[in-house]
Length: 345
Ligand SMILES: [Zn+2]
Image 1 (tube, protein in one colour):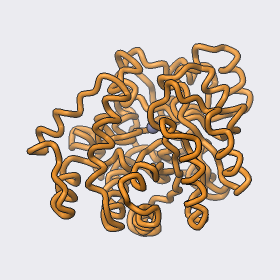
Image 2 (cartoon, helix red, strand yellow; image 1 turned 60 degrees about the vertical axis):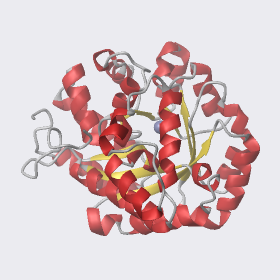
Image 3 (cartoon, helix red, strand yellow; image 1 turned 30 degrees about the vertical axis):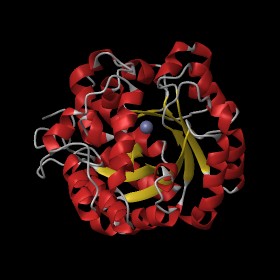
Image 4 (cartoon, rainbow, N blue to C red; image 1 turned 45 degrees about the vertical axis):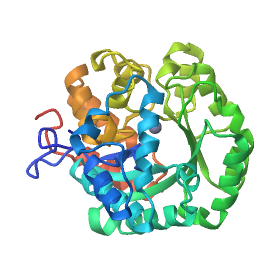
C-alpha cells in the first residue's frame, strides 16, 4: 500500500532529498481519509468498506481511473476537508524525503459540485502555510484546468480565481488528454502568462508528441507533465533538451494506467540518456501505489538505476522547480551533501 512500512524510509537513513512537481492533491485521498470525511459530511460512498474501495483501484486506462477519482471527491466539502487532505499528504511527503512540493488542484472538480473556489483554496492554503514549519517542506500551488471541460469553463475558472492569484504560482492542464489538445486552451494560458503566472501542462501521456509541441509553442509552458511519448519524435526531444524544458515523469502512474506495460520497460533511462531534464513524481499516489520515494525505489529496482542516476533525478527535481534561486541552491547543496545510501533498502 502507499507509503507502507515496506518502502517508508527509516528514520536512521533519511531518503534522498527531492522535490515533487507532479502531484494532484485530490489524488492523495487515501481510503481511510475518504471514509472519515464521508462520515463527517454525511456522504454515502458507493463502497461498503475500505477494502472494497481499494479493490476498485484496478484501472484499465486513464478514463477508468478518472471515473473513480471524481466519484470520491464527493467527500471533500469544507475548508477543513481540504486542509486535512493537504496535511495528510505533507506528512507522508516528509517521510519520503520531499523537501519541496508543487501541488496541483482541480478547481472545476469542486466548483461543479457546489464547493466554492474560496473554500478549496482557503483549506489548501491553510495547510500549505504551515508546511514549512510543521513538515520542513516548502510548497507552491498550481491551479489546473480540466481539459475535457470547455475552454470557456477554463476562462471562467481563471477569472473566478483572480482574487486568489497571490496564492497560485502556475496554471496547469490535466484530466482526459486524447481529443483535448493544448491549443484548445490558448486564450486562458495567455491570460495566465499576462498575470505573471508560470505555465505547465500534461502532454504526451496518452496523447501524441504533437500535443507536447502545442504545449510548448501555443501555450508557452515552462514544464511538461508526463511527456513520455515525446521520445517518439527526435526533433521534439532535441527541442526539449535545447530549451531545458523539464518533464515530470510518473513511473508508477504510467504502469497503473497502462501507459507502459511493465516498469522494467519504462523509458526513464532513455530519457536520461537523451539529456532530458527528467524528474520522478507520484501523480496520484493514493491510487497508483506509491508516493515520491516509493517511485524512486521502484525505478531503482526495476530499471537498475544506480546511486548517481538517482542523485541526478533528485537534482533535476530542484532544477525543474519554480523555487527562487537561493532556496534552489540550498536544496541542491542538500542533495550533494546527502550521505544516505540511496541505493540501499
Ligand atoms: Zn497528473
